[in-house]
Image (cartoon, rainbow, N blue to C red):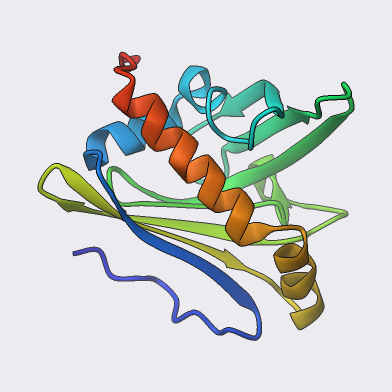
Length: 164
């Protein structure tokens, strides 16, 4: 089992923890391949217009989310830690190359544990203040992250072909 790198603090952190009915290798591919991530990463009817994944510490993780009305919302950050098939840590607090962000919001920790053909999936959103945690919760963290997790599982079960 993968050990969590932080002990979540409910004052600052939000956690989504579920066992899902898809194997960890396909969850990893869905999270680390832009062509796959575009299919599930935002609650429908929102879409991902573009996505960049430079899977290395300091590498870029960015996307442009598009609302049903056509408004675009760019998000940019960088990876902090990558343990293949087990953990992704990325943040918008730092931009690619570890450059400070003018608008930091949170750091995400995705922990994956293989359980046969299933995966224990733990997503933790770490915030610097109680106010930013509360804002993220009010924005719909649990519903939104839960919805995209369900969309990812559906995408995988529909038989997507992992890109090498």
